[in-house]
Length: 425
Ligand code: GDP
Ligand code: IMO
Ligand code: MG
Image 1 (cartoon, rainbow, N blue to C red):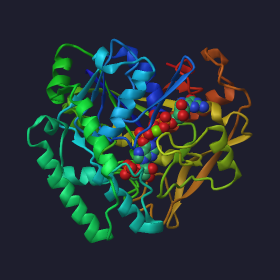
Image 2 (cartoon, rainbow, N blue to C red; image 1 turned 90 degrees about the vertical axis):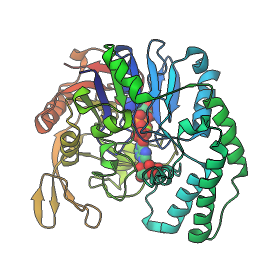
Image 3 (cartoon, rainbow, N blue to C red; image 1 turned 45 degrees about the vertical axis):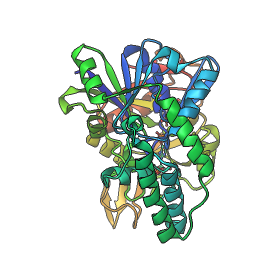
Image 4 (tube, rainbow, N blue to C red; image 1 turned 45 degrees about the horizontal axis):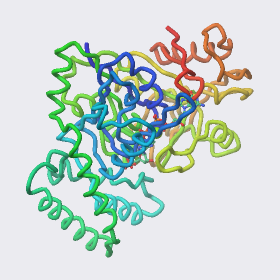
């Protein structure tokens, strides 16, 4: 099987960017399959830090091709900013020819962002807490069969199509929200960015990926967001607008299910969530504050403080089931150093019953977590490079998780840098 999938098992920000970067040398092609610039994937190496929003996290390896797949929604302005930043840092993607873009990927228009912002504002306290990047409205136009795609930018009638969709959006904004904010600057930036995108190789990515598979190339599909933000299975309606699960890799790249090999599921040693919606193990107290401080839990894209809590095993088991996870990666174990006791939610109490699964409605009645208390470890993990340096209590924590989750933890991350990664099995 040629295509491995790497995705988040919680509410996003599990460390996908870091781990994709670590694994990239083993792959010929890294392909993002869904989401858009709502994602912020952080990579650190050689004292440098990069945050990627749209570009796959294999971009720093010369022998790895990176593809933005058809399931992704692209904001040309953000993509240009990413490309420019990488160029400034000595990575000229046009020269390296290591970035391909799917013609079937949809475009985020400036007015999609206005619609996102207006909709959130109108919802007040009940808002989703979206990243305001226009993700929801763009996927709505995709499924509503109104959207514009990357391939359209090459057509002579692109401007006409753009004006038509823009007109629809401005009438909606006027009718629903009574105002249309000025977006002339963003519109100019949009068309400038489109010109840059035209210089890249725009491909029929389903053919590109399947040809790569035929040639025996190894492909890693990179997910964005996390399973609990999946449009079908997440904490609806507090979710994103795409399938963040393994199935999303099939539709987001045009590959058949039998091509999927390993499914690498990432989770933090604890749990975070950014934006609104239920979070059963949330610690709205000093312990949560400590996790946020030590773990630098602030959004890579929006800078918002992330909500923090203990690990949630019913949610993780659900994610493992939905994705067919074959290997686990645990990140940010170093953040738990020094906590005398740590806690793992093994069950919920929901409507008077003790259950070990994610119930249908976690929004109107948030399930109450039942915790197992676990002895913490004090050792600083960030310098650990050998397996025999792992503290016993951390090994015990991982053994407990493996038993509960019935999947091996193959990688352990003990810091944000590439080198702070241990292969356990
Ligand atoms: P992604 O969206 O899943 O790629 O994750 P983000 O980049 O949004 O958030 C993960 C954050 O944790 C980033 O700041 C990473 O640099 C950082 N990080 C990743 N792995 C580790 C780890 O093992 N320990 C620590 N302390 N930080 C980590
Ligand atoms: P990465 O790939 C964490 C959250 C938003 C909001 C909800 C809907 O970095 O893990 P959207 O803008 O998608 O309509 O917002 O989803 N969200 C993320 N949370 N990590 C992400 O991506 C996210 N992308 C979206 O905060 O709650
Ligand atoms: Mg992120």
